Image 1: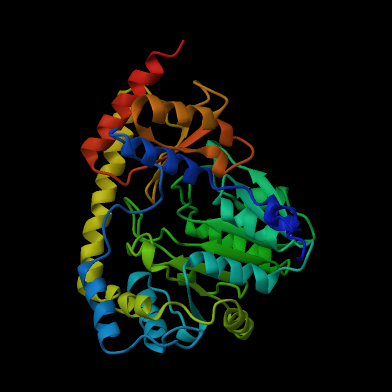
Image 2: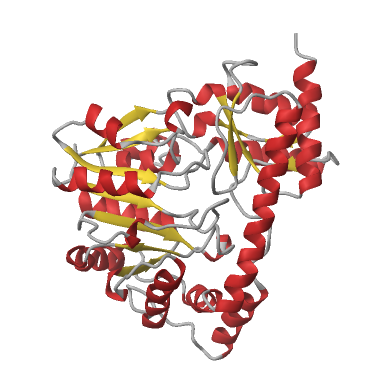
Length: 399
């Protein structure tokens, strides 16, 4: 009989073993377990709209399957969807985008992975802010790149600036990653600043990757894309998704817009990594870009805007200090250093004692993440008010 070797003793990739878990998923699991015990849980941890995908999206995808449209699409995506997205950029952002520059991906995470795989060699440096979406760091590390992290705070609205790029610049930086609106803070980079950053980096032969995944969910101002700038240098790659504004999280569909010279490389990588994005999802996305669907999504954006205001006012009335206020997305990044220097432990305590599920900032930042919690206003206004009251009662009783 051959010797049976226990699977846990077999060698594994050091890169895979070094990847940190997504702490929010642990909180979600604990929250679901408490719900199963009959506890009333207010979910403010997951970065997902609480609305279902639009009925017209479901109908379009179903119709496509009924018509047998379930085979592979071209790797770059359905030509009709790429063209429809190009037209969307024209009327939504007043940006001229060639459909040939658009690649449809299985979620924006795939777009990020493809982009970084196309750009990085082992040892290459990528500069990004702290806090940031955690997968940005993980993707760079999986490719054996080096993360250059710049600590951000409320003085710069938790966003990178041109001045910070100049101050922290290193000659061997290959790319800079930013997000506007940002996760976890909901803050924006002004378009003039973003354009200046792109020019600064172009002069140094460096890429700028702009995550616009939450564009569309912007409050008190119009949604904007860096691609609307005339004269934008050819070093900018934009990542976007059908998940957040479009409410299609489970459909797993995103896209990137890259310079034409980069498209053959992205195409080859995609052919090998996943072949093509899900076909029914692409037909659903074609429908969500129609005028009537966009009008319905605008109504949902207005609901998020009201929720944002309700959450801010409730927290201020409860006596909580807010060092910054979100301008987009559906998150509020709360500095809880007055109460703890261990945000993870506080998140667990709040969940267990109050039934409010929040995300610890350690998911997003290594510098000050232990002093922050992320609140997602992806639930009804009355539940947001109730959540703040529960948290206030809990924190008021702390010694």
